[in-house]
Length: 309
Ligand SMILES: [Fe+2]
Ligand SMILES: [Fe+2]
Image (cartoon, rainbow, N blue to C red; front, side, top):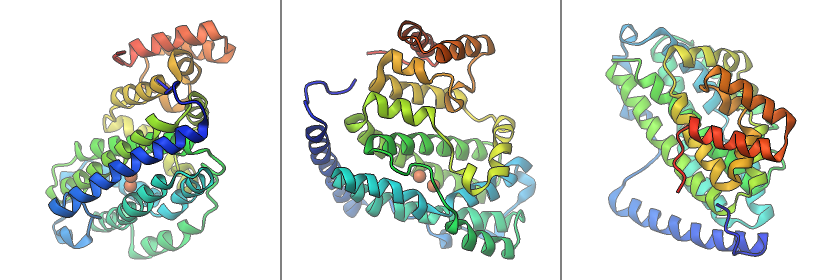
């Protein structure tokens, strides 16, 4: 639940900033002694050992899509850094510059090399994507508050992590398993980082607005693949149960039952709900009545198996 004992937004952000710097100090100290993390390196993988016959064809289709989505990490960082600077959340700039961005910058080339190794793109297509995609106009997140950018980040990382997991579970090729396992671990860590920010700074409205307007970045980088992706995800057994459970948990923490009820029929969260439940929930969402929203939030909590403390 939001920390109601902290009076103003400025105070809440100042306190969150201090706590997040402490967390990052601890993390950086640990990573120096134990070398627990570093950006992924293309040279760590044996690209000539790719065996596409051990992989579900849809996973191979997914490689070019995820490659395209992962290329323009600077475009994704921009609205986050702008929000951090505007609202004085220096720890968010530190997280993005020191951890998130260096790791994300490795993901595009890694997936691109996988797409090349499994023959789903040519070298010319690889070069074209790497040159053209960062030039796109990327409006998602522009003007968002810090609470909104971190909620967006957490949701996006959750979806990405589960996509890599679904892909990994549909291949027996050791090379691709290694690539996808490493990617999934980094996305999981990013999700955890955004979650720590979200718990401290996001208001109920930040969360509701972000989820209602949520668009995956693939709608900008690769609209055709993005539209195909829910079919692909279904073929690979994407874990909507975990997606909905984790999302609903975060929304409930920041926005309570009525906030959850207001967003529950949004595209990002309604997938995986049984059809009759989906119908009832979308009705309550359209009517937007506080009592109905509250009840819809209660139902969604039950359906997504969120444990309420
Ligand atoms: Fe990534
Ligand atoms: Fe990530």
